[in-house]
Image (cartoon, rainbow, N blue to C red; front, side, top):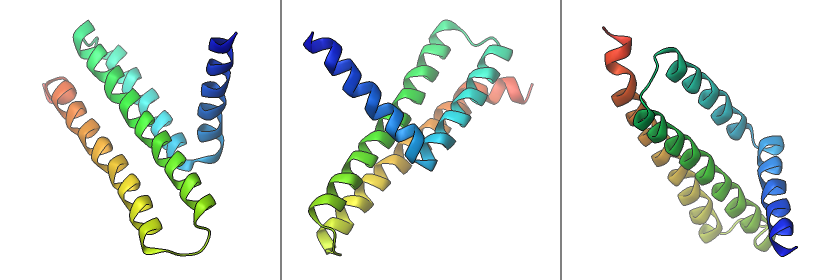
Length: 115
C-alpha cells in the first residue's frame, strides 16, 4: 500500500507543476514537438532513448526548481539574500539543463534538417 501512496504523491507533484508552472507547459509543448520530429525523421532507438532521457531530465530539473522555490517561499517569505541565491541557483540549473537539451537536439537533428 505504501508504494501506491508514493506514486499518488509523485503524480500529484507532477500535476501541480503542470498546472501551476508556465515553464513546465513550455517544456511539455517543446517535448511533444521534438518527439513528433523524432517520429517524422525516424530516429534510431538509441537516438530516441537519448531524446527521452534528455526530455525527462529537463522536466525533472524544472520540478526540482519548483520544489526549491516553494520551500524557500515558505521558510523565507521576506527577502533574504540567501533565499534569492537558492532560487537563482535552482533557476540556473534549469537553464543549464535546457541548454544541454538544445545541444542534444542539435546533435540528433542537424543532419536530418540540413540534408
